Length: 506
Image (cartoon, rainbow, N blue to C red):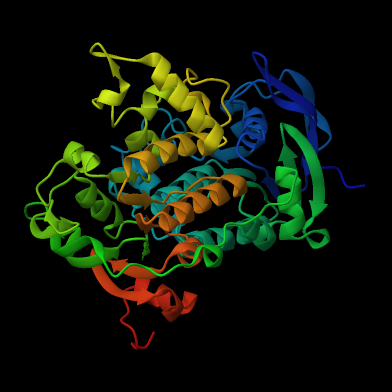
């Protein structure tokens, strides 16, 4: 039998009383793509952080080409040809692409011109159109992902660990990433692909390791399995998918939210939104599709009150709310689930209960003699923990100790309550596992049935098609058109997202 490139043998890791990994064993061969599949909290990222030296194993052994190795730090891992691209990028936004790539890798006198040429050749070799002099803060998320990959390649990695690499990418960017992965392993390198997206697994993986509750519950060749069997292994039961058709109802003709000719433009800058006009009816899901960075975030923020429009009007139930601020719009029944939950949706070192009242602490229902009534707050939070199946023992748990899926459920619970009339969902399932995605979808459809108006911004076309009654397509801050659910195909919406008009030759 061929000696494995890397092998993990009976690895266990404990955090206090929590078992993160227990007796995890699997291997990866040279020239192989290994998918590590499992729900949030299944132990996927932990086991890879052990292989990369970010965590120290408590039990077990690691082998490279049959010889036992010790990995105490990422430096040890990089010396063995292992590099890891984590879910949250480790780039310095105020530095250039070149500076980020050489950070920690080049010592002594630095010949910037020579290094820049090396990096330019590397970007061209792998077909990554990245300017070596560009600042990270000015790059789109997809391009930042490419810089992370280039950084690993610059370190001459031959085992690349990718943790949820497509969580922040558009469908087109995801497909380009898959192409890179196939080319990379064709050269004899190996990739471990941590994900919960079954389509990606079936697209790119040679072999699939399924994890649940910190243990391996499946080691399968791609040809031996299918998406349905993998989902059962992941969650340990059959998954009943949220179905828009089961919640179909007549959409009210009554307009709940109207945006009239709204433009958002910084002084002497290109407009991020240009003359946007949209109508959102009661009991409707209006999907907003587009490549990331085409004005979606500004659209959400101008409705929620985080920014004011340069020109144009916004109406809620016929009332002009254009100049109203965030708190006023919360009071009026507008909820907002932001795309970046850790930056805009939570205070990470606060408890679940504290995060639940972040936007309504001034409400008298929480107060007793001028103070927050903790008993009422904890009772409310426990009810939401139960209703949204949040994996947390108590309301006092610090939110940063929860998995990403459970953090998102906390925000979801809060904003569904805040959004009595309108709920804005910006990338609500980004980085979530299959079970959590399905739960979010069910929540959106349930709120729609109650007559709430939903604005759904997503770069996942499957999500847009599955949930939306009508679909608006944004390109460079302009609406390319608004279409009924049945009027668009994946090909047609792809062209609109790229800036083509309907009927225009591609």
